[in-house]
Image 1 (cartoon, rainbow, N blue to C red):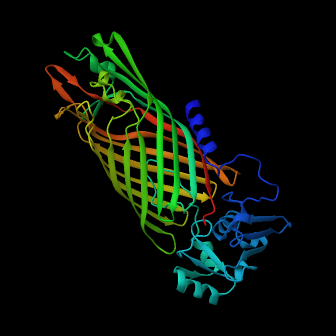
Image 2 (spheres, helix red, strand yellow):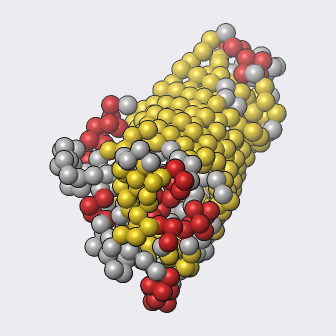
Image 3 (spheres, helix red, strand yellow):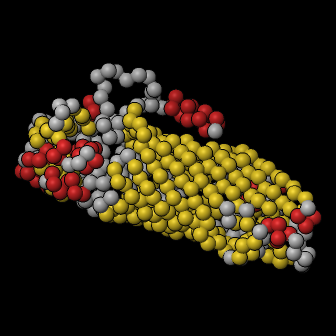
Length: 447
């Protein structure tokens, strides 16, 4: 874990925007996203509670989330929005708004306030979008913000200037022998006639680093990397003896671009194309040609293309993914199998601080190849169910921090195997996986 925090510390040190120096006392933060409100004075909102206490947000979208979370407009004595045209404050309930225009001055959804419907309509003719009133805005808003990648990447992208970074720890264990879609206890498997040896357990642990940045309002760049520690336990002599092999180091890195092709004016439907490249930063060792699961990297580039679709219905988000990855042959004449992947996710956002989710994904891998010869006990299908909890626990440093926990189990596995004489060469499956991450998200002002 220390390695990832060291990488994060270097990253933050090199980034002049992310200074951890104490902010000036007059630098106020948005109560939702944490962005400094003085940097978004053209869209800032003032909320006054009935007890006289004040709050500020960077814009209308964040204000609507507070209003929803705290019981509606009736919980406030006054809600004043900053008009985009005349630069003055007006009561939110009498203001007009434009959603989905070309202009994104603060947070997404980009909802901009105007003192009058006439001003809103004039802006809409120039910049596009939909003119709505305060009630319509309250009914359509739902927590979304700057999402970090999970097993199912969302089609909803952060706006230009939005930066997110996450550090975490992952673990994975596989402890069942898979003969096609049938599972068997490893100790029973090695006792079958002619077998004598076979895999007992495969585990992997590691520290992860993920980062993304909104290059534009429709284009996001993401990077993920990890330091891995892998271990394979093998039964020998009919299970009377166990041999353990370990391999640790940096894994391959993934660089991904997501480009939004289409989104509707009410931010309910999103269609995004995904493209990525695998960077061979991990070690490939010929010692583990017969145990590809122990390899830290492929030692070759890979290329991914896919489509993402997201749909919002009130506090529910539905996400769908389909992708295909092509892996090139490395200098050792070894090629990992190409991957086809599909997935779906259901995320529930009862308020802006909490997300609960379930994700299902399946990966079909082709067999690995050595010198153009296919390796029989590689590839096949794995499907998994993952549960996710994401909790925003701190607003600071011009952004917000969240804790993400996920845990999953295989739903269905059908893995390739091969028979060599009386011996069966198999793969491991079953087990579980999970990770924990701390994420920081902030959007920087864009000129």
